[in-house]
Image 1 (tube, helix red, strand yellow):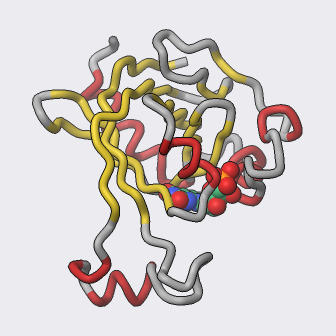
Image 2: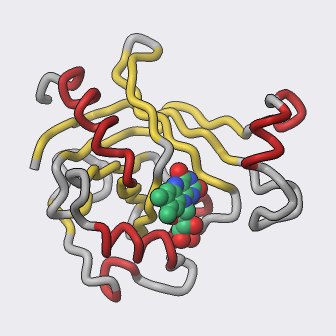
Image 3: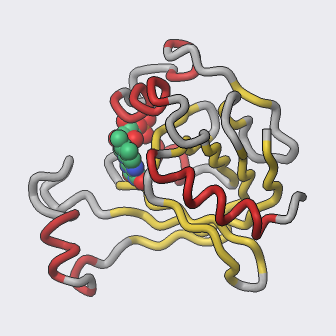
Length: 166
Ligand SMILES: Cc1cc2nc3c(=O)[nH]c(=O)nc-3n(C[C@H](O)[C@H](O)[C@H](O)COP(=O)(O)O)c2cc1C
């Protein structure tokens, strides 16, 4: 694995316009992702709302891969993966999105990106909106979300098995 701490800083900068979260054969755009050290391991934390098809897939998955494009690149693909659901679309096939072979048991990431994080899920937790700042709840978990309960995120913590530049 490359020196992941160098990649962390770069990835967090590049992530500002979105990244790809691959779970099995589905891919969605994410904006919220944290990279750090937890439990003595390099860990990637992602936030997936319960309404997403990706959420259903991850309930039964052990791994996921985060692929991070260079800032300003792959805007079309990021837009496509944010506006289509794997529930009724094969986004890789129909969106013309190519994959790069995986180096582990994690799913193959999105080809053409700057870097990839192959991850194994260590833990999941559901957001408890009753114990969340009211400003955050009002802004991000109102009844205008996909489900009337505010469509809270499941937070997934995953060990980074491989971190590398493409
Ligand atoms: C820039 C951007 C960032 C996003 N980040 C997230 C995120 O971190 N978590 C999430 O649940 N949805 C996020 N979304 C929404 C999903 O990408 C979108 O709902 C997608 O269609 C879900 O696909 P799926 O149904 O195949 O899982 C984001 C959308 C955009 C445009």
